[in-house]
Length: 277
Image (cartoon, rainbow, N blue to C red):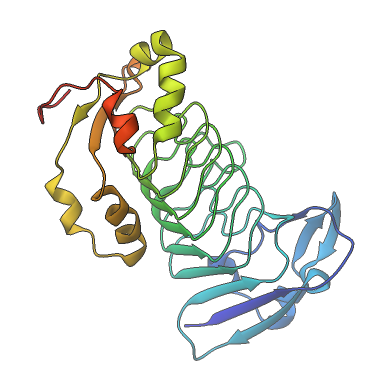
């Protein structure tokens, strides 16, 4: 078991591809080999040691830690498969792309395409868990197949686009076009006023994509014990909770559970029922 600790060095690089930092590959390398690992910065090949300082603790638990100014560092935790990947700071695009297992914790915000497909693959995250304490950009959970994502802040446009399975929790507001092409899986939104407002503005399109929202009392929420999930669920338990099915325009049977303010709830026009919509 080994813990690897990467600290971003200061430098002029505008964009860094971090997909080469993978736990399963690090486990086969010496510290010198890790420092010589080829990476790409601004389109040029650069040794990892020029971009990050590296420390390996051979007696620690299986963990990868990366910290520093990471907003222009993309593909962090790509293909992560087991153990913990801890990101101390806000990260760039494509975090957790192609992830298959383990856990990723981000102490900050992330850019676009959280848990997206990696490279030319058509499937995004297919296992494990990602927790983001801050906000996420556009296309979070794009083509997600399995696993869990928890976002403690807001999310941009196209949340859960073309999602196949898995569960996404969002504590804050969401952007436009939630669940476009969503086939299955669960999306739990603790602050869905903007989601409802967008559906109202495009009522015809919303009717094609979503079933009629109904009041819902999900007993299964009591089974969750992860404190990050409980933070989202706690908000949902204080407000009216509804369920809709999506994306019906592609034959999807995904469920979106959402809470809205009392004022917004009055305007939804739901059926007072807990039956499956």
